[in-house]
Amino acid sequence: MVCGFFHDRRRTIFLFSISTAFFLYQHMIGLSWDFSVYVLNARYMFGGGHYMEWLRAPLMPFLLFTLSFAGYRLGEYLYIVLASMLFAVASVKFAGKAGLDGNIFYALMLSPYVLNWGLLAGTELLTLSLLMLALTYLKTWRSCVFFGLGVLARYTTVSYLVLLAYKRNVKDVILCLAVLVLVFTPWMAYNKALKGHPLYSVGDSMFFNMVYRRQYATEFSLWHVAGVIGAYLPFMAYGLCACLRRRLPGYEGLVLAFMILALISYWRIPVKEIRHLFNLSLPAAYFTAVALKRLEPSVGRELVLASIVLLNFSMGTLTFESIGLWPGFYEGAEAVRGDCMVMSNMWPQLNYLGVRAETYPERVEVRAEIGEGKRIILYKYGPESEPEYMHDVDFMGGLPTIDETYSYVILGEIGRCAPQEDVDGSMMELLDNRGYDAELCPLLPLMCG
Image (tube, rainbow, N blue to C red):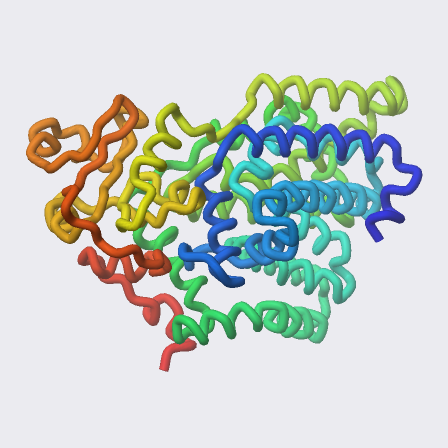
């Protein structure tokens, strides 16, 4: 399918090549917290790993495992190529169904925002690709599979199942939901076997992201919306108005509904980040493409395409996002590497490097953890770095210190060494141990018995 798709598509191949090179370079020079956790989950789920975050959806770890035949490091880059290829196919297929030029729409989808945020954390580009394919094949059973895979990529995708109403046939909707459950069944069986509840991972994600993080809630940000849409804003507004005047025939109404769902999903999340608006990229590109379709006859298709590519990749480079590791991170990791259990404010990245580490202790727990023989390495990555007590000079000065540099401080006692353990507890278990009322059944009562 993919080989046939790329046959005689020179412009599509060019766009795919330069965007994939951008994604690969971004990953090569940085280490995303989220991306590293998905790699760790893959290692844990399929044998040999010691770290697991249960609140993460399983599709990306599964793909990483599938592509890890030559090692997980190479598998990461193969995953990026695969996700980028799927995005190219989904963009062109969707454009064809919507009556738009495939190359122009694909170029519009490769906005500066998408280039910088699509694969930084790992799942955004994959999820949007699956959703686009679900919309492309909405009238067929394939959409059910793509919706199911989308939910397995990011649990928040479940809100887009409302779009199944466009099938306008109750039997088709019921069949689609049955297919979705079938796609989800292996993951539910895994959860049941290890945690006793088929939707344990979903519940852990709901608790952490929707319940626990309410105390850190942020406001709806128009700057985030503007950051996603960018220079498309006037064209998007024109295209949207043109569609509204035509009373939204065909895909226009579907994309508008998709846009509303993307905004609602962002609004409902307590802690709002710009990447939570990633799916807004689709309506931004779609309505811009509708506007440019009217402009295209007067200026020429090639000029429109060249202008989009030049603008997007220039702005994408100027606003380049990368999660680099500050000086001293690797030195600190080597300093605590050994047989003792480690605690840190950079625990996922340390686990990624093979150092068994769990999250840093609360202030009241620090002395007890040191007494048990654990090494606590706290990285100094700025005045707002956590935990807050690392900025308390009096408190830190009274603790046994093994080493301290401008980048980190290592707390512990040389004569004590806590044995290493797997770090595979859920957020509910961690927070319940720290005094929070963290229970699964109030969140998912239907499957508790």
